[in-house]
Image (cartoon, rainbow, N blue to C red; front, side, top):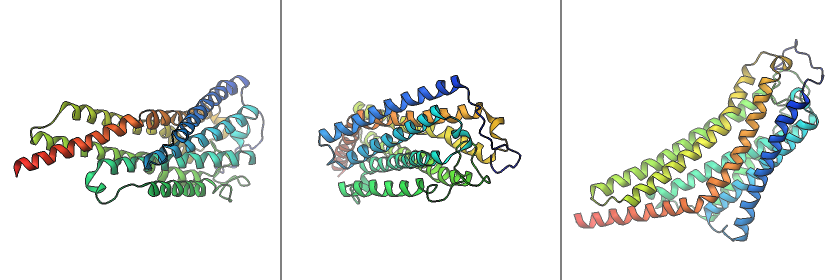
Length: 323
């Protein structure tokens, strides 16, 4: 609505019954699958007593964040199926699930950033000599992530919403305000979800490439190192692409929302189908995270450790030969 007085605010049913089911059932299914995946990750890590490792704490907390995202997504999907009009015209009933959804997504993004930084510290030997990520650091990172996500996500519940005013009202995510969505998405999605991980994983790839060149200069480069380097690079790229595919459509929807000058009825059904699809993509990210960060965590960790040890031993040997 964006505060345009010519838009009608009546709550006439405009959703097609078949369209609601076509969008709602897949959303519920994906959310249920994500809950199962992330619960499996959490129970497995707790049962194996693997939480003494700093990175395992971050992995487990990421699963918790994805679990909350799936729960809140399930809540929103249920509201959409039972009363789809309130997801267009806005309602007080949507504030709490949207706030929980926002908080969970922010927590997931912050955890992904923390994991990327920890992986960078594990690879960057020069920084590791000055700072070694310990269990206490991981716990502190988890607490900071949740406090920041909780504060920013709950701002609409604390009054920053457009529930009782039509000015600056979001058309896609009523009763959120457009300025709140812009405030949340630009620093958190663009910077935290896209730019920081891209820089972090590029730095990891560059560091590995420099070590390989040093080993080549000593005439000691091996096929094992090259294979491990390629595997780490592929995993890093896949992590970043997953975040891009999951959050970029949502950000595009927010930008459209901020520049939109049309009413709800004029946008139905196309833009609202797009909105629901962005929610499914975000949930797909919650499905992808357990696969990347848990099922491949040990092999990737072993690769990083092997690269570090192999590079260190080769460079030391080369140095001794030169001396």
